[in-house]
Figure 1: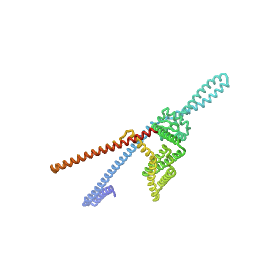
Figure 2: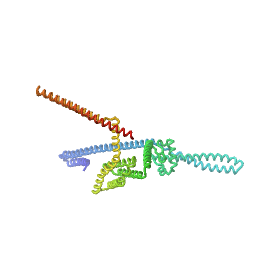
Figure 3: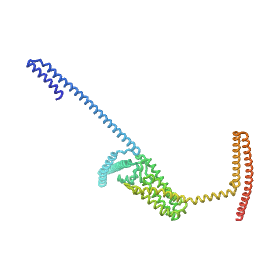
Figure 4: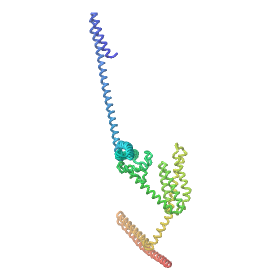
Amino acid sequence: MGDFDQIKEAIDRVSDVIDDAINSNDYTDLSRQIGGLMRTATDAAGRAASSFAAGVTEAAKKSAADDEKKKKEAQLRREAAEKKARAKADRMAYEDKYFARPEDATGSKVLSVIGGIGTAVFGVLTITFGVFSSAVSGVIGGITAPLAVFSAVITACSFAMAYFGGRTARKTEHFKKYRTILLKRLYADVSDISKETGIPEKTVVKELKDFRKRGMIRQGRFDAKEKTFIASDEIYEQYLSAEKRSEELRQAQQAKADRDGAYAPEVRELLLKGNEYISMIHEANKEIPGEEVTKKLDRMETIVRRIFDEVRKNPSLAGSLNLFMNYYLPTTTKLINAYKEMDGQVPEGENVRTAKREIENSLDTINDAFEKLLDSFFKETAMDVSSDISVMTMMMQQEGLTDDDMTAMRRKQEAARKAQQQAAQAAQAEAAAQTQTAGAAQAAQAVQTAGAAQAVQTAGAAQAAQAVQTAGAAQAAQAVQTAGEAQAQQMAE
């Protein structure tokens, strides 16, 4: 039973209790019964008020939540609309950067239709009036002749309206199609545009040039062969750079081919095969993702390329590459291709991992061997350099442009003399120190010892100088004799 029902029942009971008391004329218990019913009604009213207040509060909260939700939804809708508007504005700005906005073709179409109708109507009238003017003489013929001329003029004007209106409407529709296609990537092949629009390629080229000239297409131009239209100056500059690099590469390849063409047939064939092997190594390296293997193959490609570069400089080296060309390179490329095939195996079994590891290890050995082969090309050059240095040094000595043996020996003797003097000075310093420590007697003895050492040094120096002088004289005599013999032999020749 609800609170309001309890209140109603309590009020009804109060009425019944009062009626019973009046009827029975017994009022002793009336006050208690009415008080109890009133308390019941009051409690029920309190609970009803609390429930009503709670309901009002809950409704207010729900209303506030609904309002907040509506505000958030409205905010999201506004943000979405603003984002859409910004995107549309950015898109329009992007489109306006490269293209003018398409014109409305309705007016041109209406003009074309009116011109067509006028051409048909006045054309018929022109023919009719012309027939009457030629067939009927008199007043009627005089009247129909001017009408025929007037109809002919109107027919010509109507035809012009139909023609130019139709051409303008057609070009406007074509521009819309070109614009839609070019906005996708800002460039497109003429053949693709023709297939997509159904417009002949010659017409596409002609109209795109016209639109570019009129400013309807704001940027870009055709490529050199007029096979591709580029609607962006930035992309066109990239295209020119790529074309320049391609032309430089083509010229380098042509120059290389011309140089190779000047060699003997067997050398040309060797260089041609060498380029094929280099390309095979390069392409395989691009398909193999492993970093370590890539480094090894990069090194291999560099070494092999240098080997063939040396053959170009010195074609006589081609004869020493038979084993390299007929076994080493074919086997190497076979191993690389096998590694490439196994590298794509999923899942990768133990046998595949083992085989790949062995090939990876063998690449280092192969690279070292190829590097030694390349280094062997320079062995003869190194020997020639050493021989040239020896001959040049000997000729300089004969011309007196370098120090001879006597000068070198005197320098050695001078260095020995200086070393002996330094030793004597060290001995004197040691003697002085001993004198300060041990006393006057020991100092005198140390001085005597140092004097004796200096005397010995002096005698040794004199004897060494005499020996140097004697040896120098003998060597000088021998050098003179050798020079005389060489000069005599030269004069005899």
